[in-house]
Length: 447
Image (cartoon, rainbow, N blue to C red; front, side, top):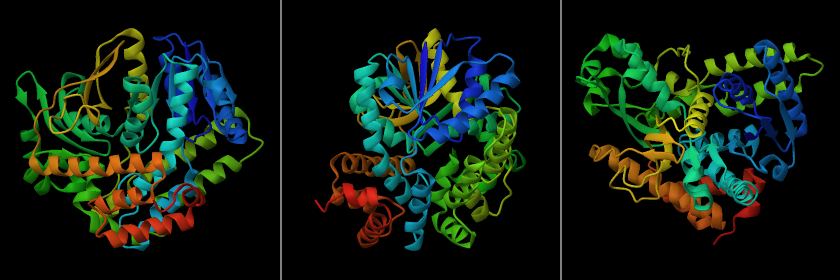
């Protein structure tokens, strides 16, 4: 089986390779190919992977290439982890709206819209290459904004494109730990869109355990989301939201917290990773140590703006894999027809009855040889439904704008977003993005 990782020079690729090393005893992987546009980044990450293989004691051979056709040809699985515009683009995504008093965040609000406007055309091109070079391959999409990107590429690949995110699984692990139960023994009733999801219930053979957890202040304080949102608010809504919902529920607080920060998350990561990639002359073992140190520092600062706004200390979660673990679970379930249950980004079909069949949603799915099949979720609380419907309209306007190059649609997407206060502000933000990002200025005309 050939597995290709597009974006193979990315900083988090060693996490994926480490997960592949653990997976190879259960799934036969014959060839791993890393593709990237930057050969120097590929070389640097390749050193880290060599260090991992030596440490593991049983390497998984890989090769690198800058030729996309070669990378994709005949693949069984293609992982996508690209960042169009790199971290320099992310820093702009975050800074532009913040200057207008609006949340500046990578995937939520205007930053997520701008990120998608750059990313969707490249991802659709990848999907078209796959359709030609590897028509039976599965696209496992890590590329953010994962929901929008997955919906766009499904126009080419259909159900063979599956979006993944580790946010739901991480919350479910934390909730299970707070309940003193193994996560594998519980059913998690999750619904929403990517980075806009809620845990509505936690079931075992006796009933729903979530109300008892919500009533227990001490138990909620052991969960990061409990500290972020506060027990009183969680009891008010009767659910536990994804950490990214904090940006909607506490938007003004977050904007003020970011403004107090010495630099944005994107600017911080840009500096940190530039130092990592610039290092030279290291052995594989040294490269691996350098990468781990940078990764640990990165993890400690994750969601720092939300924590700062909430006035809580961040706690780095020990145990449990991130998005690389979710990707391997999908690969293993498809390869072995395991009928595994995972929370994924897939076409709705009828999981959420208020959205159409092709809308990509984030819900529990049964995963086997035929792909990921969403489980019916049914009706959801009115306030969550209203927000999901509004953000889905934003996503669809963004996808259409990205594919047509329409500035009018891009402004519409920004103006419809709940965190953007007016059409005038939306126009100003888009004009600022075009002035700062040449690729947007080149692609979008005022039509």
